[in-house]
Length: 204
Image 1 (cartoon, rainbow, N blue to C red):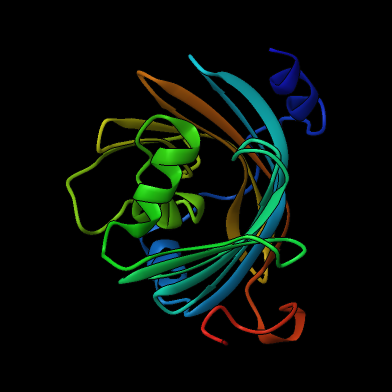
Image 2: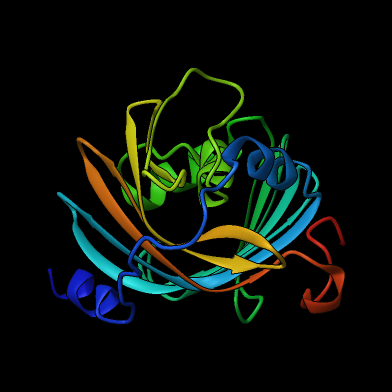
């Protein structure tokens, strides 16, 4: 529980305020984003223990580049993932593994975590969207913000949003299944080319 207490302590819940939100229009705008970046922190708890660390997620079309440290095994990794492959390299470039199939991301995370995690859906959940590939149920706040999403055996709870480039984006959320719970705090969203850092996920 220490990891969760430390992570939760970094943020303050924002009271519901402001005019109602047209969430359908917001969803359409966010779903159309081809290139975005999120930087923050993640905490994980499961029957194998827990931990916390840093997260950088850079999405370029269907491809992603993630830098993670802490809960996904020892040390830090850079993960480059597209719909048909995944490549994992240690931060100092000394360790590399590759998978070559559509379930590559899930295979890697399954090895590291010991329980299945739907990486392809997580891309959408992080944005406050349901994965369009599978059925989902949603609950909304009186203001119109997405409060809860159930999909693929996971429950995603959205605790706080902040406006980024005129769009309401999640900055504090929890993902829970019968075997694990993850908390994510996003310190910085980037939805415009001027604030993106480093090469795109599709770069070699």
